Image 1 (tube, helix red, strand yellow):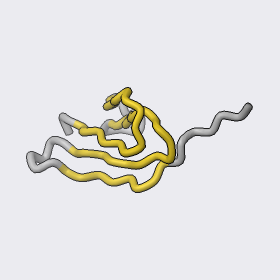
Image 2 (tube, helix red, strand yellow):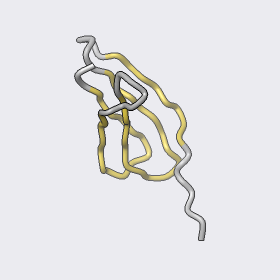
Image 3 (cartoon, one colour):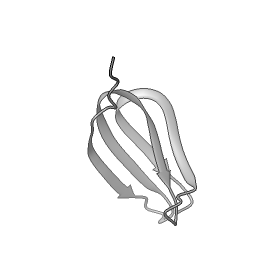
Image 4 (cartoon, rainbow, N blue to C red):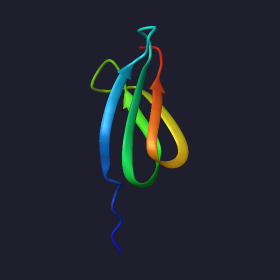
Amino acid sequence: MKIFPPVITNVRASPGADGTTATITWDTDEPADSVVNYGTTVAYGDSATDATLVTNHSVTLTGL
């Protein structure tokens, strides 16, 4: 049995009004959790997650 990851579409980044946050949104073709890894270097270092299984994802990044 092969397990395939969800297909990700409609990825968008919207800056917050305060200049220190951003909201990342995307859609998947099947329910999945939401994870965004981010940082100021290629090593990232920070992540924002939501374990709720959804097809319309939204994660807010803080401390930018």
